Length: 255
Image (cartoon, rainbow, N blue to C red; front, side, top):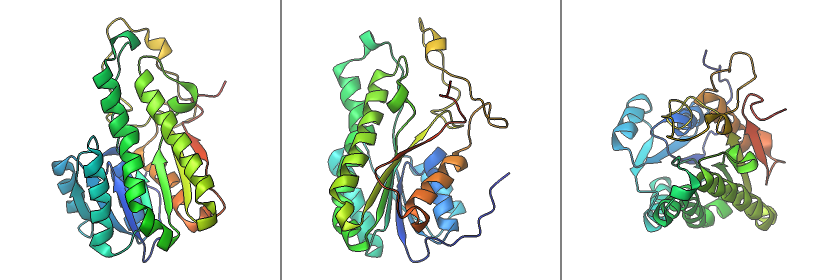
């Protein structure tokens, strides 16, 4: 059942959401719009953005390649130009790749870091002048693997740990300017990344998965569960929260 939304915490605010064509990004774009935000939805998946636009016609959609740092920065500047301001940034775009560590190539490593971490750096840096004006808020999607690791995805875990460290570092540097930086760490979520992955040949899957424990979420959380957390962190309800990583995993990594 979808959560009832009564709040209008983002009236008059502009929010950029990356990875908005599907999964957590899509759910976040819809959630922020439902609470009054003017949403700029960005992704490389044009068809997915068109589907979002059919449901959210007020959104501005931008296509970009997160593997291209210059394209990421240009997209952020275009988002600002579209409405003349930027109050909230959700850095959610990312890819997940599984491989035995010995099989990860330098190209694999570089590509995953460029998309999952490098694009966050370029987007936030490009958005910084506008965020300074608005005393805005940034939330980036990390992962439980950033804290706990995960077998057969060392490059993914390392990049997600980098996101956590980046948000904490920026929170310290820009606290006096009133900009807040936080990260969320989803566990298993019902997205193309979170469920339905094909087994990796030769892998011991017991090392790569842990069971969810929360009743009603045993097969994974919903994208909307993470979107509601992101919306909270972006809002003034979280005005005293910065530099933190909040886990949402149905007790997956406890015990």
